Image 1: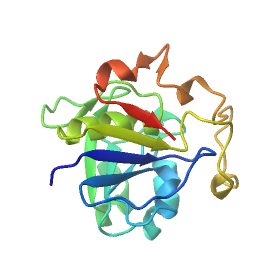
Image 2 (image 1 turned 60 degrees about the vertical axis):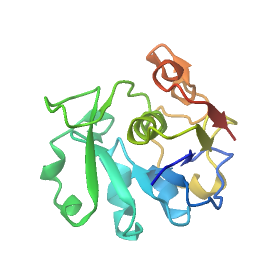
Image 3 (image 1 turned 90 degrees about the vertical axis):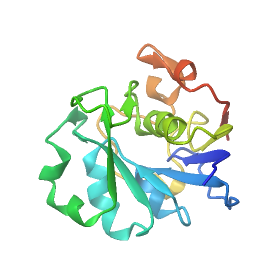
Image 4 (image 1 turned 45 degrees about the vertical axis):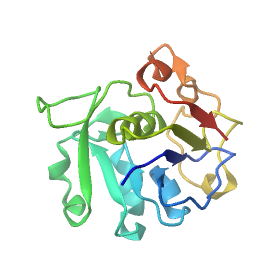
Length: 184
């Protein structure tokens, strides 16, 4: 399939679900996969949100996680050690926080947030992408009401942290992704 646009959904205040044509994909980050109709891809840097949503995921949704998913914001054990993942449609990638030597894996160099990972991932998966759109990221402060009851990691304040920017001291995603990123 030739994919022209990717729509990435995050938990910020501008989160919304949209209908997309067949040549566009829906990419959910963490808990958004529970509120987006028919996502194509779900991206999780951290194992905790995946543990809370996996039973409700659309069976056609491909789940991308790092080879060493984060637990409590740090790289944890190899993904094969998590029993619940064996029943899911999992694909893995190398995240810069802990890599394995496997050239067949997609390498994600900037590990700021799962949204940054999703942006880099779709850019590398689909050469035909012309635009990447985000909903619930980089605009506003805090969570969308659908996500306000989710336990927030200590010290993380969506919309007010450096990780909610495309460019910060950890990296410049616009230098890696050479396609327009449209923030809604």
